[in-house]
Length: 330
Ligand SMILES: [Zn+2]
Image 1 (cartoon, helix red, strand yellow):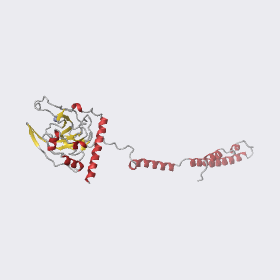
Image 2 (image 1 turned 45 degrees about the vertical axis):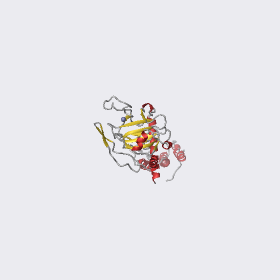
Image 3 (image 1 turned 90 degrees about the vertical axis):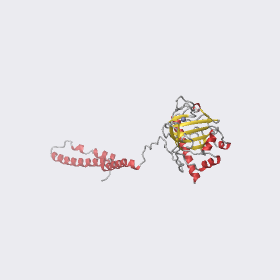
């Protein structure tokens, strides 16, 4: 079909000038015949004009077949979108950190030392302590760290200048060591008759089993094992200001002797190994060879946002440490 310009054809075809004259009254003789002929002519002309107008309109409007195929294309595009394109909403990031981070190169041989204190039986195991490796293992060997003798010597003093040299400076206030824990039993003598005869040399921080325990200050790991009776899996840090912090009853330790850790580094998980009645951290703070009450020396507890930031930083440090250990091992 010949395509016709819309405006031109309509203006010319719809308003013919001639047919109007046909309806003027003519002379009576032979008038009827002429009128009939004019009607036929007018009818023909009208049909032709009407079809031309329709043709012009059809050429200007989009064809129904084209519309239908366009709709089908759109529909198929919408259906195909979820499969072929990435989801517009990004996957939500996990809000909690992994509970267990497997230490590289395995664990120390499992051991369970059990004993009895009064009527209570306890076990210091199962031993869950990473096997020392890399630079930290060499440092521990050089400084004679990690053994029960080292713990006995360093608990009451005896830190050499060489040990203190590499440790980052300690902050004045201690970081609260269990983000998910609250202060339980305090320091010193208590009224409970079964405990009244002996001093509690630290503070207890009850928390869910597996809750993360972190370094109260930057330090050097001088002991991480379960050889100290009653303490279970146990970590001791030496700090640059010659103080010590100790973390007992851990379900597992995630550091080993010879490692230098920053403030907030994850040392292990809350557990109930050793002489313990329920999952909690027994935390000790030693200064000038004497256990002291740490309660007044804790920094104000961080806000939830600050806690989150600290945890992410601790996670990054742990990953960096694992990578460094893997590289050193190659
Ligand atoms: Zn305790």
